[in-house]
Length: 398
Image (cartoon, rainbow, N blue to C red; front, side, top):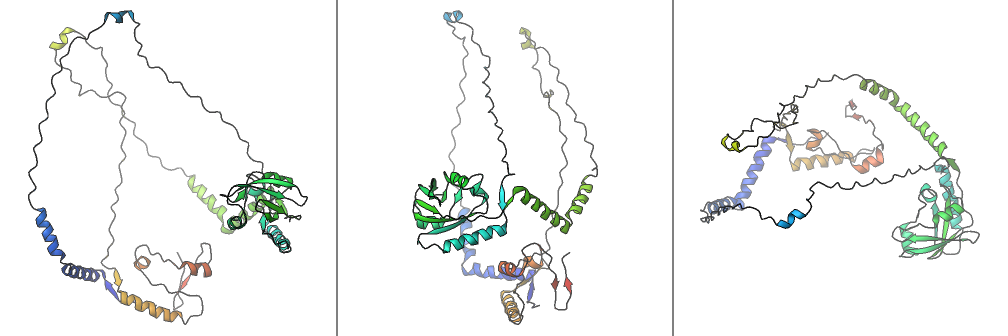
């Protein structure tokens, strides 16, 4: 392992302070800062005195004028009129799709159908553009949408929405709607698919006779099919084998036992209600003016309940001690990298050079590897890697 020359944190800090002082003297920043400070200390101009606001004139309360014609009118009604309640929208129970009749092609059957379709495509000698399109579940069931390759549509089809006619081996024509923006066939494709009993895994060979006419060749390659239930059972068996391999069943049972233990519940203090407010009949008399004004400060609001406040936790985060941290200079870092590359050229197995940074050896202790090296030489899934040093000592992860 190649070692680099290290310096302490305090030495690096002092070195940076000296460099900053030299830069400030070079650009004369100290004098500029003093000039700005002297300018800012000048007395500001005298502010204008705001005019005092004029007091509001007293309002003279006079007796309201009432017309004699109001007595003949009906008394006004001030009750709130209820707003009409909107009726809820009707809910329609949409039945779920029946997937029992759907069939799926195995990967081997799908590849076999594509290969036979490509052989059939190579035998064509008309000179027209051709396209091999394997069928997926979305093409032959559900949405019935057939997407086409974008580059194929740009080279041979119209740039606007148009009607494309599909001609089968019997000469029957099926009009379909071509959407140029989405590069696919929409309306009318379902009729063609249902008429020819297309299922998942079939491979069709399209021949572009005209920009608005496709010829579907006489032979449509059929793939070996499996039902939805067979695929479902096959996936269940594969999942069971994986669970047994990683011992997931036992782990799930242990977690369930731990979660079933009764947790100690804290007793909550009962909520204390405030004092009741005594409501008395209002006194209305001419003698009220001679009585002192009532004091309402001691009266509490009605229906307010005190809520116990939970104590908050305060975590005092300790700052990291950076006094013992060391830093490598740029020259030492380049020197160690060059020597490591010389050592790398001697080795025969796949290898790479990784210079250490602060995050690798302090703090988080995380070592990132080159993406291209991992894709070529390491497994794609999470796995355990054992590190072996020059003396043969192994360091497995803990």
